[in-house]
Image 1 (cartoon, helix red, strand yellow):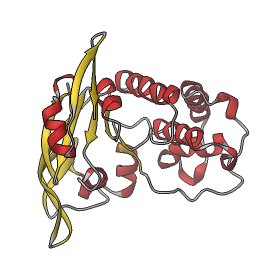
Image 2 (cartoon, rainbow, N blue to C red):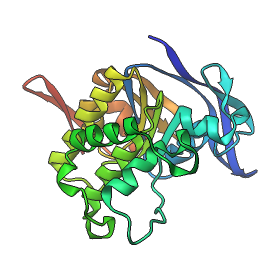
Image 3 (cartoon, rainbow, N blue to C red):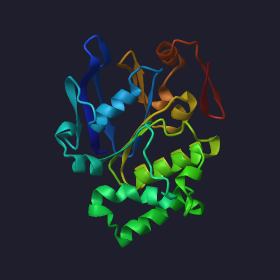
Image 4 (cartoon, helix red, strand yellow):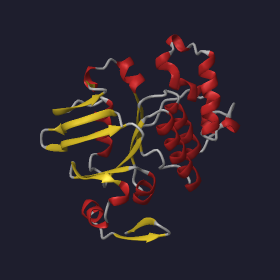
Length: 255
């Protein structure tokens, strides 16, 4: 599979005495979903910010299509990488669902003048994300989970090669968590995209991601197939006793 992103010996600290990431190396290839796990403060969100180019590592670098992300212009970065952060977005009160979602095409359209194919993609994306019934509704009237689906839909509108999601399922109910991964899998296969996603729910990640990167103390403790990760390494990373069992061929972790 084609290499989309390559992190090479990345180290980052906000202050000299507070190392967040230490000698991190991994790659993201097309048609794979990688779940990033680790306890709070392990460096998950920082890692996404470094991959996106918003933070510059003190050592090493992140390369997208063999080009250092730090050398991308803002427009190049916006087209190549679709990044959804945890931070609260500043959204006008009059924005409807479709106003918000179609802005995913803004990097490709000067002055916000959208083309016919943008509106066709908008309808297709709203349908994929189960949001067609929300057309015309103000974002301020949506629940947290409904808004998260709109955020996901706007990310898809970019049609990017690399998607970065920071805790996208945190406000979703079980049904829409499953829908998120159904759509994510469809996007990665149809668009040959790579998806890097931070997530707290261990079982959700293991059962829906192709690979798991497990962070511990700013280092990678595990990088491999999601189906192969063991309870021992999860116990070490989260500092709790974890056990695993199979039910109908599916691995579940208990803690």
